[in-house]
Length: 109
Image 1 (spheres, rainbow, N blue to C red):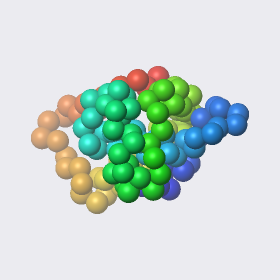
Image 2: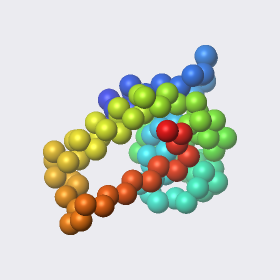
Image 3: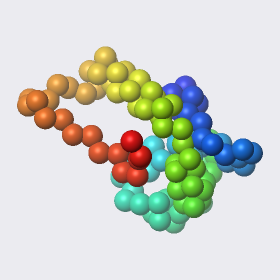
């Protein structure tokens, strides 16, 4: 997983917080089923973030700002590679119907 996130960059000139740490926070937000960036902000000082990610989670403002500036072709490539790995390792099974939905909140396509 880290190799997929490391290839995604954003348009900031001199970032203080790495894109990798922001995207790691977003993944943790997704995996822990937190509902919003505000939930992340309320829990970001807990030690669980440092144990899981090896660092503290960035603020909700930073996460939102960086996610708005992520290079979309690189992000698409990383998501496609992740999806391919999941399919290859049988993490995702074929749906019973021809309809498959994927919802990415906040992404511009």
